[in-house]
Image (cartoon, one colour):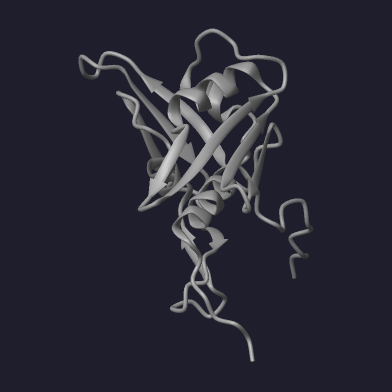
Length: 171
């Protein structure tokens, strides 16, 4: 018989972080279960700076503390923009900045119109998965930034599978 058990909340947090950056080749997320240590190995210095500012260094779950460490490959750059954080992340369709609509400039991080899944031992799901959107993960994981909003594209931007195929012949 299979062993049943629910994922601990700190393990679920790791899986959320991993799901958000799964399509970013510049970020590698590693979880050390024995030491409750979550490490993000980051290639870009500006992306590392953003993660250092937007992720907690530790996250408490009752009496359990998860350490979160950002490990930059070549040091941390001075300053960052929200676009630096998502540069190269294939889950993002585009980032749009608006100026002059309100007193506050607004930046929209627009994620692809797709469902992202990660394992949670959810007994309510046949596969034990959590299905959500990238925008929800970003809001859950990252500290808020004034004027930055996460949303999902309202159109699918992937090309149709049959483009370039012959249309058939006229009778």
